[in-house]
Length: 180
Image (tube, rainbow, N blue to C red; front, side):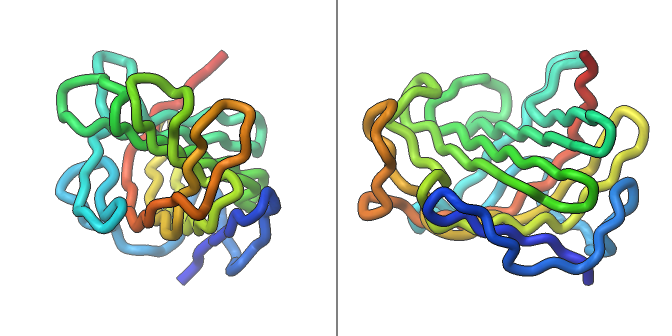
């Protein structure tokens, strides 16, 4: 089984596990079998679900291809039909060549993307990419995020892991290609 796992600690990325991965092809992992595309799991010990919303050609699951550099952004909302930021969960990561080079996970507490938020910055979070397959304008992406998100109270101040919350979620989505 091929997997890419990266761990983000105190501002540094370290490859924790990595076997060969071929972009444009499935990683050979069976689908996660989520009830529907989105993000499911637990946050602070509570079972949670976030929905990937779509409207026409707009989607909250997107990717860009910059010639071997892929940037993937997933934004899950707590209601299946409303783009409300409160309690939303954002998962973003970058693949360069065949390597996951960085990621960011943010749980929005309020009505905006400004703090207070729970973040993977300066936290103990692992992202495991289980599938990434590009077919034309769509990329199937699946994986898991596990660890503790740190609380950032004020913009510009460092997050506090002491006030963090546990996260263990799986994500699966069809991301739409964004072209510039």
